[in-house]
Image (cartoon, rainbow, N blue to C red; front, side, top):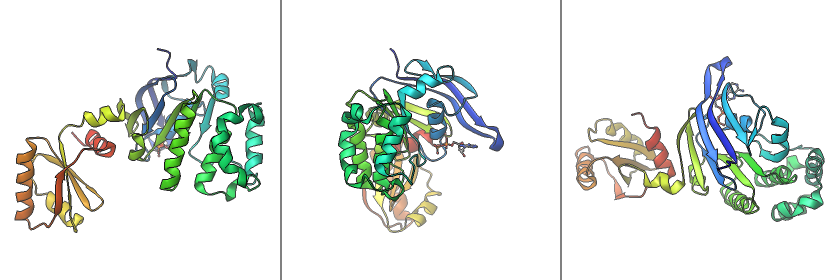
Length: 307
Ligand code: ADP
């Protein structure tokens, strides 16, 4: 297959603080995929995006974007991709309209020629076209940045944490926009620390401490969950976590708001009843204990837990 992005055995360290940001990373993205790179802060997502978009050199490994080597063919790569970096990428003192004109001019493309790609997003920005970009709301800034990253009709779009700091309603809307971009035959590679957003991707790579933990579809990752997950609600989650140190059952547990999530690895019914007995012996009040289906966050915790 001709991959849209192919990453082989990529390594990157920052010697100044002795950090291995990327550790033998290999991923391949299919053409026209909506591919997610999902992991917490410091996992190595921005480092990987900066290498993919030719802004940073790796220590070793090989990366191609649309068959072009990101080091040898960096100029061609730059003209073919769109990039929405994690940091604010617009000119705050230019108006909405001036920003778009600036980016179109930089890429030698005409706004009128590519308006069809950005139209659904641009329509929402039109009432603010004379407003300075720095004065837009977080969600609107991201929409403008997206228009600027798309105005030269890239074949592949990279977005580094585009929804970080954006309110939940705008986040949902932003993902619908990304689906719309994918439908225009643009490959979309997006990173996020929000596990709930992972399910909106065709495939995801889970990343932690510079290492790829798993690459699969969200449903494959959920299907591969080993163990039986239970939840229970308590008014004293901190007290319960303290008591849990004395629990000798073969399980993994972690807080989830005012709930405890607990995974059993042996016969679920037997383990659940032994656990309830343990809670009663320690006079822990709890309610709504039930078995639940794991979400991506549960899978992530399970995959990265110390072995
Ligand atoms: P993420 O985008 O997932 O938050 P980053 O790629 O920004 O992860 O960071 C990965 C690791 O590399 C972190 O430990 C971070 O502190 C470190 N790091 C990132 N950029 C630099 C840099 N320019 N110099 C030194 N260390 C860096």
